[in-house]
Image (cartoon, rainbow, N blue to C red; front, side):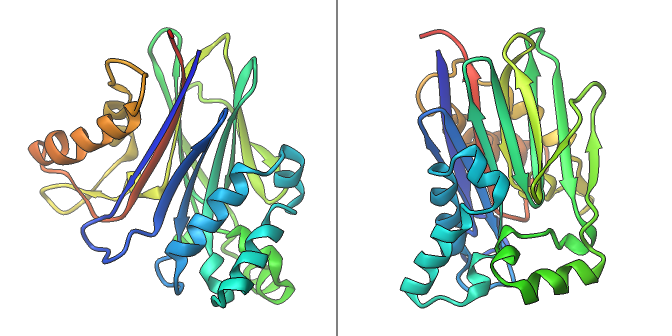
Length: 251
């Protein structure tokens, strides 16, 4: 049986949470609105719900963004409100496929319990937002900026990323993997007692330590980590955090 849950929370330096996470049948989505864009908290939600309803072909071709543009115009929001990253984790009978537009974290647990963690980032924290495709002028300006080269940091034996349209994709076969977690770049923004940032490889493993994948297992695990475990270790989230997970388990 497949279990899915997601949770998001505001970082201590943000007045409004610009991260968002949502789930549907066989799918989970995490979005992170640009901190410098107006109403990007709303934009992140629009992207997430459009992605939940998008087919894999629509994600690959970029047509899934058309729904968000219609909604943005109806609400009278600034075009930059849609500047948000988006990570989609979708389950099929034999695998979980992750598609990432922008930056963030992908992690997966093998059947033997070992973890693979992949962190994607861009220069100057300026990822290629999928909203750029809605404006030829904005897309060209970003392409000219030279900021569009991703840096991938991955643990040993993590699967390789495959380009998918303007995003990246990974596939986790059920025969090898038990659980997949996706998260915003807030997982790499935990401040330690010496004010340095903790690596995501330190933050992510505790999020897999849930006793059961039933019900709101991600919500329970993330809340406990943020309110009890992280403070005990002197860790505090500077940024918003959004996490979603899909796990094969018992009934």
